[in-house]
Amino acid sequence: MLRKSWLFFLINLCGVQMGFTDTIQLKEKAAITGKILSEKRDQVVVDVGYTVLLIPRNQIAKVSKSDEDEASAKASKSSASNESKDFAVTKPSFYSSPSRQAPVRSVRDLVNLLGEAVVQVRTPSGLGSGFIINEEGFLITNFHVIEGETQISVEVYHQRDGQLERKSYKQVRIIALNKFEDLALLKIEDKEAPKFKYVSMGSADALAVGERVFAVGSPLGLERTVTEGILSTKTRQMQGELYLQTTAQINPGNSGGPLFNLSGEVVGVTNMKITFGEGLGFAIPVESVRFFLDHRDAFAYSTDNPSNPYRYLEPPSHARRPAEGIE
Image 1: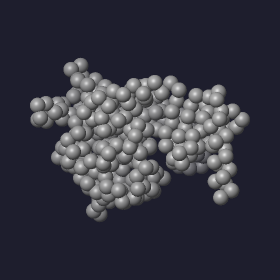
Image 2: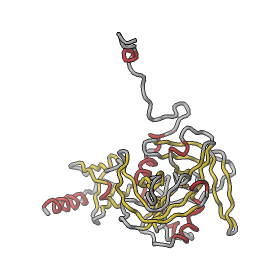
Image 3: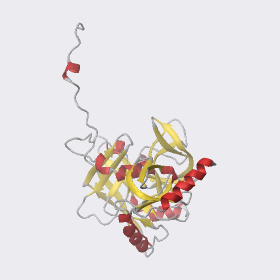
Image 4: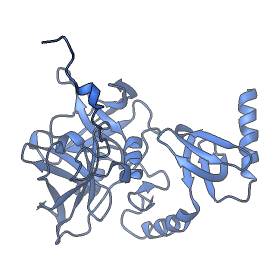
């Protein structure tokens, strides 16, 4: 109780600082005003004038920066005038995220609304799934879907006159890679490419175990396959990483596709399953995707160094000498 009261006092004390421009809304309906020094995957570092606070990500509801306020207001205003006004989003600069809780809809309605943004990613050695994150044609998929490949095509299903029209785009560039998180950022660069429909990023932290979720992808090449299930756990540890576990069926070809909540927001990226069991699918939490996108310059792909940014230096010369006395 003493600790909670101290935190409440500190939060209110932080709120009276007037010389800063960044505001962090906490889930407890309190706010901290200060200057954000850095944003890490698990915490935000804020200078409140007399001290520096480390705020855990799971306690943060929203981060508002001074240079984003105007853009957020414009995005909220324009979203109210289109047909998807129930999905009000802010557009920081690169991907969209909800500005308020979107209403729950049926899977059928959501698939019709979001289906164009889910794509099939093809390479000479196989195929996977992906989803478009902005109208310029940037999309997310798994690293293992395109690993070792540079010849990539993306198939998009455009809605025209109430019908789906398949379009294959061959000019696809690799923008960023993170093989340890199994994420890849691609961009469609065909000259005749239109403005693309895209999805918004939700929050896996806001999900509760037992909530319904659904996946859209191309399992075994069967494009636009929808599978529904529940969130089994949010903290399944595998190989040092935490994954979302779901009963929604995941199969080869689903890799890189989105896992949605019933508000139509991406909460994860499907990437694997346990082959000798049923209803044991896994997805990368969307918080990892946000971190990857926010720091995409650090993971930028380079043809001169395909493993960029992980460049391993050669060992010192003495370490390469043959051991004496060993034939």
